[in-house]
Image 1 (tube, rainbow, N blue to C red):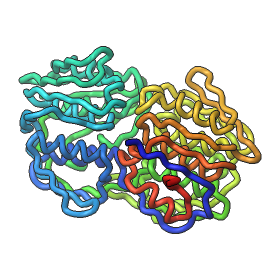
Image 2: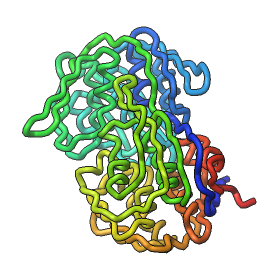
Image 3: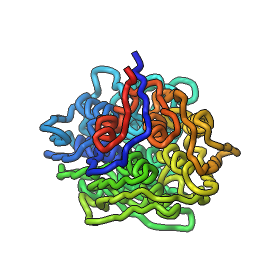
Image 4: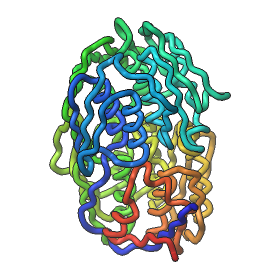
Length: 442
């Protein structure tokens, strides 16, 4: 049965909160560990349902994947082109990232792999991955609109391609590059708009030859096929997309100060924090460092008076998962915040643009959707709250409205807690330990 949660006004949020590992990097570390020769030790892996589904998938492909302790994992890979044909259907749960990356992984093997997912994932389009893979000689059979369940059959010899992304998508780019590992020659992806570059960074970390150059067409990423990847240690940084929720909560709840250690600060993922700083947020980055090729810092976040701004469309790829929580911040800022170019929000776990706008309006905020733009008008007294938000299996919608309840006049409820475990297991307990008041109401 669904487990509703109620979020009431919070006390000042204080203390040190250890955010779960980065979901994007966790998926990639398991997959590349499975495609490598030798042992990969991973520390800080996100142990949410999405990533655990990818761990199970790599076991189904024949890799050894062992849980050693909290966040600590060991993977012994099969090498590029050495995966087994899974004996059963691979269930990716709610993980769109996992399914798209695993489709690229499976495409590089002369095997047939069947994929499915939960009700939300089965509504999400996979054709944007299927189209370039088909150009490489992969056969994909899917439901109408390229939706799962689907089957991927790799050819005996994969054809390397040069492919220009029609939309900014790190998942599509990554699927092509992962498939390209098994293709003779060079596989190239051209992205007119830059997207997060975790795959390129991790491919290099495991020993692949990857070239990146800026051209008149856009950013050109080339992987040289048929490498021998070698198992390497990976330290997964705290996920900036997950850190966004306690960070915004601390900015909005008067008297708050939180320390969020070890958060990934990759500039292609850090758009929300860049935006919050422009809005006047008191966020201090300390102890900056590089771990497994990724920039990391400790964040100190203090209560702040925010002001509305216009967020340009070109920033969207670096913060596409964070617009729901930005809308919560914007409703408590002075003036108006306009967020442009949010078309990709419509094909997330839910239609996140509609879910954000409808939920904010139900809580008493003044919001407008014009095409792919979202406008939120700040209110001097915040928002009323006092309603229940349907989350439709979307973890980020769920957490965003729980944060809204921390500063609303009346409590805000969500109709189902379960989705939160896909990316942020223990969210309720962690926030309550810092001063939030999130409970079942029983």
